[in-house]
Length: 587
Image (tube, rainbow, N blue to C red; front, side, top):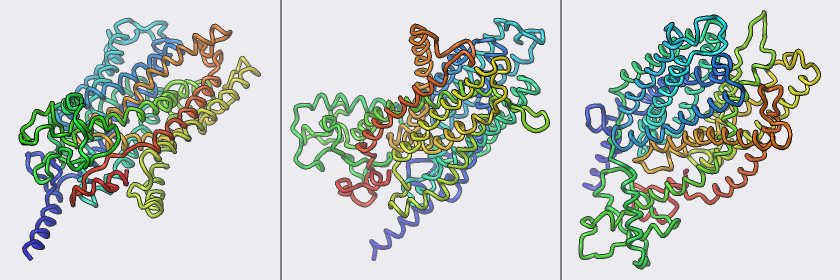
């Protein structure tokens, strides 16, 4: 009777309070009814909407600005965009580390938002302050050096701001859901879908309303809108402070991994115990620092770190550089298991990089007039990708997930890596369609060199944008979920940074690939990348990317089929580790 009463009391407490090592804004155990879940994450999704509106208002028009105002040629402009995109998506590795180790996610988002806002203010000043403008004349043959310096300083300040804002905000939103609570765990699985829904809505306004203002009113007017929106998002973020749940940073997540490696090397000659339950782990009753992981058979050499050498000395008192827990070892394995998947995503990232460069540039050569003389800005064609993603995310969340849950018994519907792989099929299709459309455009130019491809509607580009948008609903959303879920709990900002670094590294690789292809094809005759699109052979480049992505998909499927998912100890018994754990089966 006493036992039953104790269980009931514990159940009531777990329903009322959140016991996942998070705290409220006053440092107390959070009250479930008044903190976290959708009431907090909706603030965060609204902020992401505002930030993405600002970001894509710059990113999608950047190649146009560099060509028209900075007078860079096609290759130079594409490389400049790729370098900026690369820095912007690699900086989160530094920002994510600071958030996880020292500052916490809320503080990191707040500080980086201020840096982001300073970059936008400087960008606005470069358009309005006479001494900082590109030039005084209406027609500018060459921009002033001071404008180039201030402009690039501004956009790289935005890169630094994004470096802290992006990984910390997304993981901070996911932190609002308690994974030990059945209802909140299911809501968390929907979070990444709705996060991207909000992201795409911001992207949609950024590449339509803001880009239209930039094209028809002026670059400076667009910068004012972006600055105002970012300032508003900072205010919204602060207003939501009482509703958030906060994870307290636990110091550098890299130190425990180094300890595991050193301990494994030091214990390399110790024999494995016959029973894996003899490997050292902190008793569940004595841990309040997050979840414990189950032992797995992969990367077995690291298990040496968990072998107790001297049982006469209490394991708890032994040097952490000589003895590690099973959970610490499994966390090290998680990071090592990420590496092949991260590498396998790079060809996909190279394909995505083309949407912000060559896809947009193609739009400038086509007929953009619709209705009574209304002309679509070139960058606004990107809105079709956002629409494709919004529609497919909604269908996936509302229709496919419930159906797949019933069919597979998996809480997610399908495994995370299956979702990513399915989306990669769309990236191959995108490159194939892009090659066919570009071949058609070049054929039109060859028939009428004077008029060029202006007889072709810009909506010829619609299929490639829509297809990649639909594919991103599977691949990009899946990657966000994968890199958040399959890293140690103490490294979740870094996990989102790992996802962003795929795109960042792919941007740099795209620039290197363009340089290499340009060099090789120039030697064999005519370069695939001329001074403009009409003297280039982008169709051949797209075929090359399609082939690379298709070959890579075969490798990805091989890796995904053998991937060991994170396996968290059940709250019932440690023995569950040696069955199919909940997390492993649901991933």
